[in-house]
Image 1 (tube, rainbow, N blue to C red):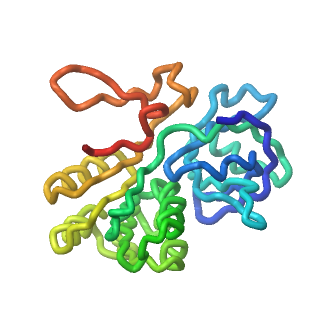
Image 2: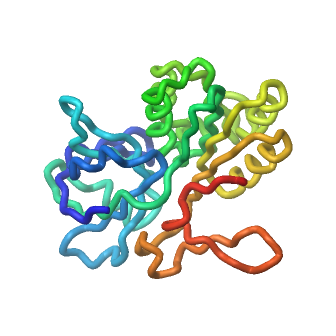
Length: 261
């Protein structure tokens, strides 16, 4: 984990509400795992007061050395609105990489990736990681859902590395008009994958977990939740555990990726 002030390499608008921001970083981010995140703040400013969490979307490399990270974000509030106005060469304070990422096994041959909206952010990093680990990407399938066609992000990145992709939208503006979990269940019933990786809204993740349990598929989900410190001190990201006794995980320390088992 490193706290450092980093320079903005780019901050590009890619959709009505979506941006990609590139940041320089410590070279040891080369050890970051898909699913990990950083906590970001604006140096010398008190608004917003608390850091904001962002999944690592990509590693930026030059001559086979990691020189930066890219974050994918959606403008949803005061913090991300301010972030969207950041310019090249501006300075941002980041803390990371934090949290537990997705786990990988060489036994995973057929992989399903499920993304809902901005939940796709850590899954592009994961897809590239699987490729580096020697997974046959033609045996991987991506299920990409959004409220409308404007919320379907990163399709080209998945296609470029050879992954099949299915898209759905809530309003029918592109793909089938249904939740992304519908084609996921159809596919899981017809051809059981070795693992399902997912990130998106809680309602979607709950349905993904039900499908994984129904067809007995190992499943890992990345939870989207508010965080204030990223280190488990504030207890602001408590996630209730399953079981008869009331107990909690901390998404920043125990997650944000959780194994369904």
